Length: 300
Ligand code: GUN
Image (tube, rainbow, N blue to C red; front, side):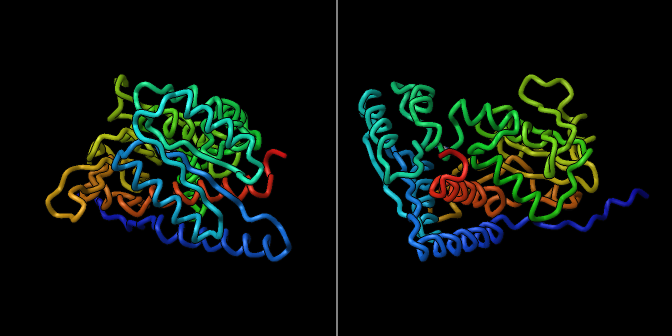
């Protein structure tokens, strides 16, 4: 009989993220003790989208833990594009602000791309500006966007082998799929993988997954990756965080990943849970970028 038993190690993004926040806090304490500037992150939040409210609140809280100053700037849904762009320009020019983010998505009447491109790339701690995306893709120092960087950091902290491995990325979004594929193929650890990007138009997605040593699922489709799509010993990173309605939780929803965990986990060597896997790492990656911005470590 085929032996399907496998020691599965859970990748604890929550624990790693707490550890990294402590590392950042220690560095900030040292910087300020030596008379240096306390890093300052600003976040712009438009409207009252439930997910965005939660994420921004978590970012502000994380700033506190890291010893950063933070500013939250709020607008109602009916803010004009010009008002928002004026705020972006003001933040660009404010020497006390080391880095800032405009939480996405934005209301339909505002061009997200225009907003992103108006942010000074030297303060773009989200790493969404084309200059940062371009520099990342050719391996130059830059702000790397939070989720891809969080995934890479988890692979590094768990010493997961990536060199020469077959990595399948599910999803081709600008925020996760494309950049994480780029990082996984980069000529250094964690990278050096043979990367295949699959998406809604891919013909042999299941076959690709079955052959993969590492699967990064970032489609935003709850429970998409099933047990029979994964080979024994694979590493599975679940980026999905769909808010599915639930009557079992106080908030009325349950965060659901792209991976059918109960089926997939027993076959894996490593797997991230949802919640508590990639999610907490995303916020901590933003904190790392803010620290870099405070130190002017990437751009002067
Ligand atoms: N919306 C979802 N993820 C993100 C993120 O990382 N940054 C911003 N600004 N908005 C988001």
